[in-house]
Image 1 (cartoon, rainbow, N blue to C red):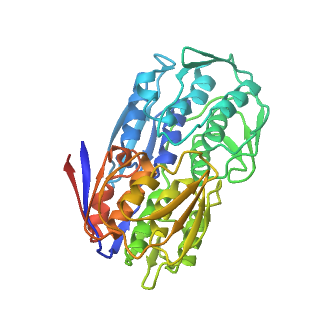
Image 2: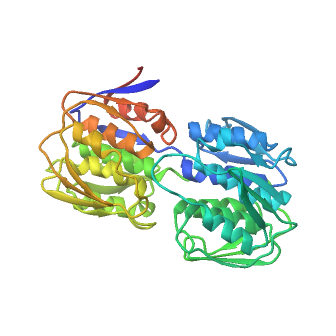
Image 3: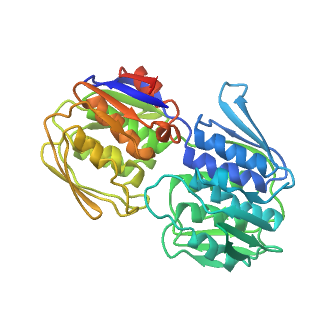
Amino acid sequence: MDIFVIKGGVPLSGSCRASGAKNAVLPEMAAALLADGPVEIVGVPALRDISTFGKLLGILGAEVTRGPDATGRETLRIVPVPASTAEAPYDLVKTMRASVLVLGPLLARYGRARISLPGGCAIGARPIDQHLKGLELLGAKTSLAEGYIEATADRLTGAPVRFDVKTVTGTENLMMAATLAEGTTVLSNAAHEPEVCDLARLLRRMGADIEGDGTDEIVVRGVRSLRGTRHEVMADRIEAATLLVAGAITGGDVTVEGADPSRMGAVLDKLRESGAEVTGTPGGVRVTRTGPIRSVNVKTAPYPGFPTDMQAQFMAYMCLGDGFSIISETIFENRFMHVAELRRMGAQIDVSGNTAAVKGVPKLSGAPLMATDLRASASLVLAGLAASGTTEVLRIYHLDRGYDTLESKLRYLGADIARVKE
């Protein structure tokens, strides 16, 4: 397996471009199953999860190809064909939770679906009960047998659906299913995430009648069919924020092109509060830090709150703060697995339930570290960039699920980081 070897203490400087957002591409790949013609998604990052999802679509009968378009942008082309099977097998679904996103499109388009219960990062329970509740309200019959979700429907019928809790993939799944339902569906307590809005933007280009995305209530009026289209995916706000924190934690000067400050407000506010200078640039965001890191408190929340996907990276940053930082995780119950590894570098962190108290230290020291999940991997890389000495991060296959050649971007900014065989 590959590992990262990082020689820390180098302030990062320069500009790099954010990749397309994985969390937007995956539901958009699922949405292609709804179309009568080819769907092209432009700006797709080279990630393991996207390759896995492409294999899943292939099993379902779609033709999936990727390569540069005429402008050199990496593009996925998905040609949906009548499903050769409506089953998403365990061998693929076990590796990534997003596989459940094919449930709504398969049910809406073909009237049947059999999906293995999803896997992915071990960061706590992420039940799909809200998906099933919503589909049942639209007229589907669902059951759970031998680790598979089975669902059938002659044709879904629009209905009011209120989510008991905010759920991004649940909102996306029901929004896709409702596009081909008969009548109007109203999704209440819907997720606000920009990735949900990007999916709605694609669906509208395909001919869907959707309004209200980005608010608590999304209204979907069903149509008979959807067409193929071409769509440019939004930039990855989590990758962009990770790179900006890399600049701040090393006391550098980093600009991330393609980053949209309007979609990153909570993270940028905390960077400013910590003593970093954050400015918008034409088409991007710039972060510089010359003074000490001020310790600030962070509490994760659904968008537009502080994203749980940035909690681990920001904790690494707070390890070098000038005082105490209280970090509260409200989304997942098992998302402090990076704490033990940060302690190996000299961090002082106490955990009680869903709260971590971080006492800043003058410096971190390089150490061999073990990544446990996607965002934990990124936090260890950031800590290694700021630490004295050499840090080795093992199991970076977790990182490869969500960051497109992160080490190349960091090297371009001046980091001493190499990918080597273990």
